[in-house]
Length: 391
Image 1 (cartoon, rainbow, N blue to C red):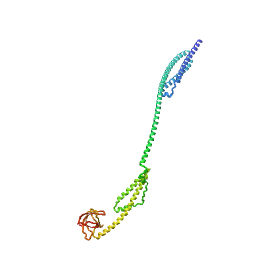
Image 2: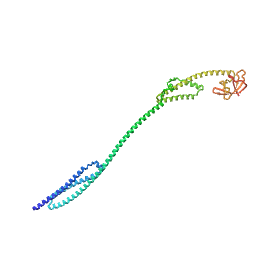
Image 3: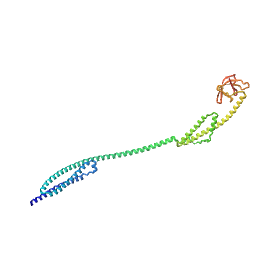
Image 4: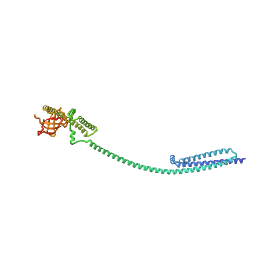
């Protein structure tokens, strides 16, 4: 009985020892693997941003899954260990032997699964390191390419800045030159269309003073001219319109804003125009006075001639014989004569002998005549009598 108890206890101790040793080996292996993975993780320092940049999210995810599996395996081994010990304490020796066999089989199975997981994990880690190495090389190549691009861009930017600076300087020079040319052209244009008169006749003209009579007698003179038939109302109106148009032109030119001598020239032109109009009005005033005197004198002469014709039994007289082809005839105002009328010319003496036959051509207040036939050799003289021939 003692031997059986000893053997039982020895066997139980060996089972416990094997279980503890096996669990410890597995735990130590897991620890070593975990430590190795941590060291590799420390050596392979890759920023999460770089992983995302190189599309390594899937590899990292796989690594994380492998680590989780290892952790689950550790928990499962620990649970198996705890459950097994608990169960073995309650079993009989025969049951304990059977349980030991089952435990060994289960542990072998777990060991095989563990080995497979470790192998897959190592393979995944190897692939991860390989991908990371490849991506790093690509990253370094891309970085060098980017640095080259940056360097080229910097050089191009410097060249572009220099070109822009040169263009700006050239632009400024052209602007200055164009501004100078513009100012020169502007001065030339101003001098051309706004000259300064500093010599010659025009200087004397611009320096002259022109007297302008404010009081006009044009309306009164115009009435006389119209009455005497010298000008028609239409001609008078047209003349007034021309004078007004000239004033409009001068006023508009004065509003343009000319400089230099032009404003003074326009002012003098207006004064000169008004002075000329005043001068013509003065001449017209004198002419009107002379015409009035001549009209009075003519009226007196006509009165005397009409009186003489009436007392001498004549219709009129020969007045002017200086052009024999066109005699000037005066007839009494109460006698109406048509163009082509025939009259006789008689000597102005007591015998009143006919000396010629004439044909009359009235034109306004003037009557002219042509000699149609002569009677004898007597000459036609002023104040020879004229008698209209009646049918």
